[in-house]
Length: 148
Image 1: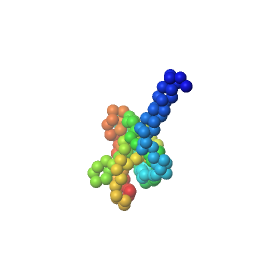
Image 2 (image 1 turned 60 degrees about the horizontal axis):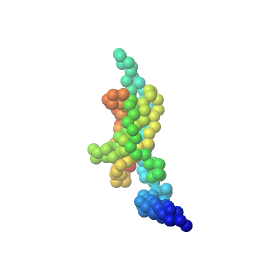
Image 3 (image 1 turned 180 degrees about the vertical axis):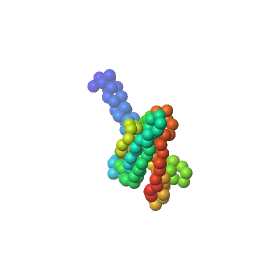
Image 4 (image 1 turned 60 degrees about the vertical axis):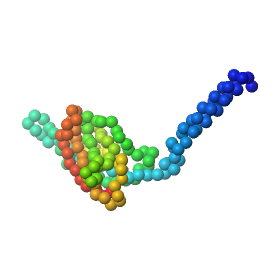
């Protein structure tokens, strides 16, 4: 093997070793099977007529918990304006990842909300659903409670 080929081989082997060392611990094969609780929210939104148009009204909220694989667990999502937002509150603190879906008018909306911190098993949490307009102003709000 020539000196140039030997240097190239040494470089490639070094690069592979560096990559292996840097990735060690970043990926846990066990994560494929691990799950974590998330909050599944369904909301029905109607629009109420006003003198100068309509305004959304959140009629019903159904919320429950479900186990989701860590590989598919919902995290922060970009802001949607106008949008429907969900906040999960435990002891007056938000414990959810930022979550929203675009608001497109009256209808049924679903969103799965990941939890940054997990309250103790059996804890009551508030689930707040809001609709924000294109300026980010809250124009509708409703809430319910569930047990985590």
